[in-house]
Length: 162
Image 1 (tube, one colour):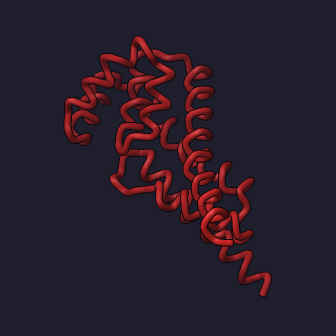
Image 2: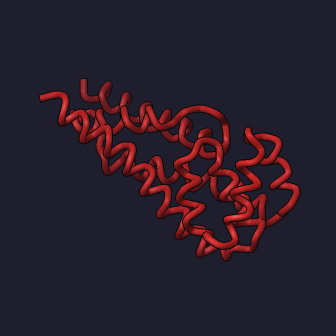
């Protein structure tokens, strides 16, 4: 019985990693409901909150590092790809203008807005943000994002289910 539970937890962790990786890379797949559900499962003891957060942060950082690397390597070409992918295009242009003035705030805010996370990470690379600074701010924003949604699931489940 415990082997089945362990296998289920591993499968759930892997699925959460893949879903968050795709979402944070810019694929229009909603990850928020899965984070809320994972938090709810953690409140019931079916998953561990201390396992959920590292999985989600690792997945988000993996996607961030790819876009950051593309931004450093190809700069303007990477941003052109993002302009074609994100609808409406005005979002990308608005983020570009405010990124220079508010780098870290944009990275955090982009994490919470669907399909804009790759724009923030790509801009960080294209504008020459130092890798250490990017990694620190991307890690922090991923932790806040994961903690907020999984925490909401955890707290709301405890409030609804006696």
